[in-house]
Image (cartoon, rainbow, N blue to C red; front, side, top):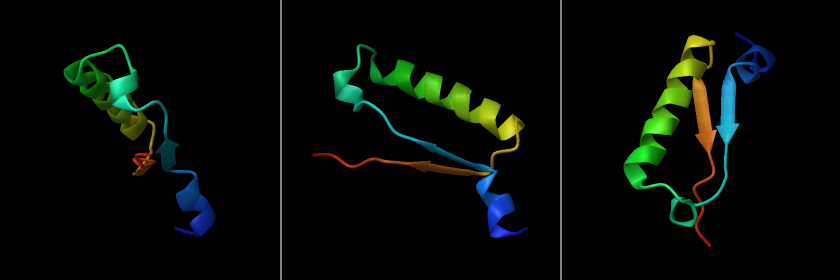
Length: 54
């Protein structure tokens, strides 16, 4: 698979830090699991996230 083809199967995400959301941790994890599983079914194979804390 070429680099360009691999890019088509990557999912990158970032967003609010969990402590800034109005959900408890288990709800956040449940939602992330649901979305990641759906993306895997759509053919995504690599997941990249920004976990930097400031």
